[in-house]
Image (cartoon, rainbow, N blue to C red; front, side):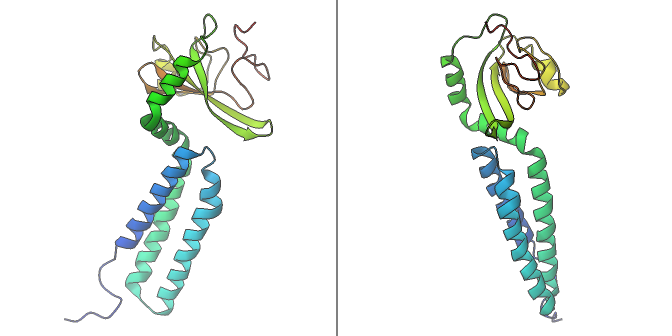
Length: 201
């Protein structure tokens, strides 16, 4: 029995291809810039959505049900993928950067000056903000005793041994290696709203 043109099973190539392409591009942006949400939300997503909406309109005008369904699913895939990427970009960025370049980061920390007594060795790993406003700093910390493991499991803000002041979050990268996110406008060795000077003279 012949089928009418434009009917039949859903063509999954379009939604799967769009989702995969968007995911790959998003991961690349996340790895190479801490500001991935800006190109994603201001450039990539609008362009993809406009293109898909035009295809949706064409499919509706031409009454191509199969294409209409595929484009609608592709739009859903764009929103689902974008939501997941934007929500999880920070842990994904840290995990991917560590996976790709952990040896380089470890060597950089080993070359850094020794920590002050009672403090863990650390380097600034990521800093965002603009002109001294809303600065968020993440440090790479080497903890030979793995004392920060419980803080990483806990996942909440707190004051932890070896870190000079309360921090927003600790994340475990691997045994003895952690990322430590400070509160906005706080930095290791400085005093703003909190006293993060620790043992700095």
